[in-house]
Amino acid sequence: MKINPSNIGTTESAAEVFFGPEPGQEVSGEIIGLSVSTSSSSVFINVKNRGLFAYSLDGHLRWSAGPVLYRFGYRQGCKQNVKDCYFSSIPVIDRCEASIYMSNTEGEIYSLSVRSPQFKWIQDFSSFDKVFTITPGNNGCLYVTVPVRVLVLALDVTTGNILWQRNTGPLSTTECAPVVDSNGWISIGSLDGFLYSFSPTGSLKKFPRAAVLDSVVQVSPLLDCSGYAVYISQTEMEEKISHVTGEYTCISALKPRNVVFTMLAPSTGSTYWSESYPGKFSSLLVETDLQNFVLDESVLLAFVAASTCLEI
Image (cartoon, rainbow, N blue to C red):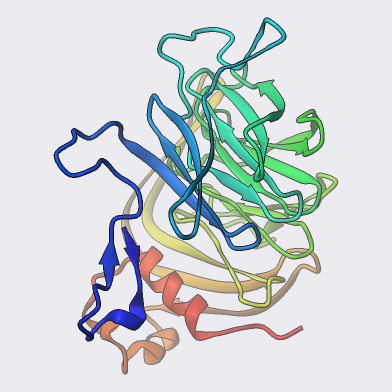
């Protein structure tokens, strides 16, 4: 749906169908995800088993692309399985490269131009896993997080080749997402209680510097509006057990006590403040609707990020 807030409360319709079947037609496919590029005035929609569709903001189709392209008699994409292979990710836009990145069900990543359906490159990462998260660096790097292997890969955006790969601690879910700040540092939280931050060249900083034996980081960090700092939440647990199974480290934790919110700048290592909830931080929430919420780190962390901004 396309929502026009200026029409709310007027006789004009505030919502209209932007993409979907015509009246009387059956639904033609599941929408896996969409992204909007303001620089190219385009909306990119991934439809399961159909492909990627690029629309102008007024709803006109510009181009479409499937996960398989035949060029000069050679097939590109879905090299392992054409029949059941489709784009499986949300379109990821790199605003500095004017590129779109997609992954398919076979563990391949595609780079496309925002202006045409041609593939710039395709790289196969199925040897790592077929489920991963793609994050644009907007700095010449594309980052791929492989949760099951607790890996972060940095790719060259022009070729898709791996520049470096580094390990993190155990991750909470396969949907865990890192953030990239304006200095090009990529940060992701782990169930071992640390925030792992990597520089554009792969150097690692862990926060906090001291061990946090009773803490876990369950939600993704948030980027400050300055672009240079991040907010993280660490949940202090009454019980936390770590055990190794083969190549993997598993962490079990029970009975959360409180949450520690921290604002820090990965590139400099500076911590600007750190407060607990319940605790002194609770006074910030007294005048908000959040006082009626159960303890939810993602809700509270979003509130903190919206309430403060670092000026550099």
